[in-house]
Every structure is written in structure tokens, then in C-alpha cells.
Image (cartoon, rainbow, N blue to C red; front, side, top):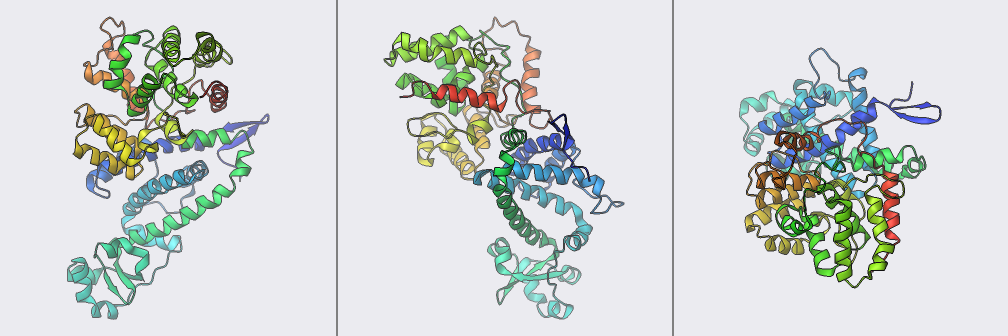
Length: 489
């Protein structure tokens, strides 16, 4: 059989439709996370929202009456894209945990959609669970009814499975099942719990095995960038395209930082003002952000030079060690690449901050007590802080930032999925200024601005051919290496 997803043409790798589908599924899994926090899982609103996202992808999530579970053509893309994502998300323990949780949520929805085909699914996948006979069911009828609140008619109609209590601890904890001699009696409507545990174990083991194969995959320079882009994928608006160049002044920056900066950028700005210096990780993250919100090259040079001189850096030393790097990030030196501001996923998943660093994501990289103190200093109410900390504990870092946006802007429903600090800034300005640009003299039409904002929202579910624009992973790594060589004390 021809290897799906790639082909050899003149020694070059050609990415097939399956990789594009996998690239679509990566932001889809992010949507699954958002829906899971916003709605009660398995509830009707949750199912409707998740089904809507699946339909956008034309995802084969449901088996119709005339189809079979092993229909190869219908599920080919589903299977291949899943295994592509396994390779992408097996690269760290954190990625594996996140991937497993989202896959479990999708699996639960799809399994429940099978309805009367669930038994066929179990047989097809050789998942054979011991069922109790009619005699034992009649003997335990009262206990079964009392434990789950089921009527006698339902008990007579349902199959009951007898499994070890350790396999369904969540049901035991909720006291929804009858427990006797270490065994639990599971009614068929709850069979999803057993199947999900089996799926979790198998997927966890498969990801561990896939991680062992990473050295082989990483040795192929054609594949590794694709997998890295999938796990850190951002497919929203390209904020390297500066349509607001020169629309902000240096005098505005302090005010904008207090009102419209995401916490990661607000933290960097404060550190720069306090210390008059940032190490290379902070300069990259904050410098590209400033470029994305409209700072010109001349403004950027003036901004950084004035701060670093206040930090006792000699002007000549700044020109020698730093000005070249700033011009480089604007595409005026070296490879002349117009580097893209960092997305949330890149900030969260790469280049974790060390001692003396201020870059990274406060929700991901801060101690919970320090994060709580920081939120208090930002005047977030106690109830809101508790909500944010709960999201952080669940590793929903972008959702925590989105909740911070809602609380700091007094907005109940923001109407977008937050994926980028520059998106945060734009949406904040639109709310604070009534969809106007930062300055009234902007020549950009208001309806064009709205279109740009909607693009960042639609980007979370749109399929694109590559996750970054103009800035390839190798180029970004080259810039990081360049900046790491300069003065970092």
C-alpha cells in the first residue's frame, strides 16, 4: 500500500492531505479543551458545540445506519492524522497529558454517538467484559436499583457488566454503582467509563512507545519541523504584517501596558522599566510583540536604547551588541526574515524561563502563590482569582488568560478564542475604544479592523498549509541563537 501523507519527489518531502487534516485537528483539540471548560461535559449544550466544531472539519465522527465500523475509506484520514498527532504530542510529558485528555473527550463523544452500535464496537475491538446472568441480576435487583437510582424496568432491560472496582473508581467515588467483594456492577449506559479507561491506558502506552522512536524521527530534517509545528501550532492571524506601523507613540506604551497588555507582556514591560534590562528570552518575546502592535524600527531602537542606557549600558556598547539584533528581528539584517511575534503556544511550550528571566507565560511558569499575588495587584476580584487558579491547576493556561481578559475588561463573553498576545492587545483596544484604532487619525477603515479581528477568531478552526508565515522554525532558532550570544547579565 502506498504510504499515505507523504511522497518522494526529486528527494523532497511533499506533505499530503493527511498532514493538512492533522494540522486542522491540532487547533480543533484546543477547541475541545475550551468547550470542556465552558460547558458541562456530555451535557446537551456541550455535545451540540462539539458537534458543530466536528462538522466544520467534516470529521467522520458518526456512523450512519448504512455504514460499517471498519469502513476504510471513511476513517482513513482520521486514523492517519491521529498517528501524526501522536508523534507530534509525544515529545514531552506535558504534551502527552494534554493530548490524552483532549482525545479522551473526543472519544467519549464519539462513543456515545454510536448508541445502538456500541456492542458492535466492543466486539470489533475485542473488548469483552463479563456480563452477569439473569439469575444474578434478579438476585441483586434491589441493590442495583438502590445504588444507581434505576427503575426495575430499566434493570430488566439493561446488560450489567462485572468488573474490578479499580477500573471504575470515578463511579465508585460517586456511589453510582453496586459494589460487592471487590467487583462493581456497571449498567450498559455507563459502559463508556470502562472503555475510556481502556482507551486511556492504550493511548498512554502508545505515546510512551512513540517517544522512544523520536530519535529516529528527529534525525529526518524533513519531518521534525512538521511535528514541532503541529504541537506548537498557531494558525490565526499573522501579526508580523504591520498594518498599524507608527500608530502608537513611545509615550503611550506605559498606559497601553496597564490596560491592554496580556499578563506575559505586562510582566516583561514592568521588569524592563524596573531593571532597565531584559535577558535575550525576554527581549525576543517582548520586542517582537512591540513590533506586532505597531512600533517602527526607529521607535524600537529608541525605546530599547533609552532603557538600556538607564541600566548603565554604554551607548556604544548598545549599538554594537543590541541594535543589530533589533534590526535583524525587523528583517533588515541577516536573512531579512520578517519575524513573527510569539503565539501563546510558543510562549507556553518553548524556552522556559530560568532564574533572572521574565519571559514565558505567568499562568504556566509562575508559582501559584506568586501568581495569586500578581492577580491581586492587578485588582482582580477574589472570586475571579479562584476561577483563574482553578484553570491553571487544570493546565488550561490560555483559558486562564482569557478569563483574566474577561475580568479585567468586565466582559462576560469575549466571543473569541485567545491564542496570541497580540490578539489580546487588539481585542482589548477594540473593547476600550469602541472598535476604533489606537489613535483617531488612523486611516484604516473601521470595517477593515473588524475583519482583522474576526480573522483571529476564525483562525482557530481554519486549515492552513503552514502554521507560521515567513518565519520558519529554523530561522527562529537562528535568531534565538544570535540573541543568546549577546550581553545577558
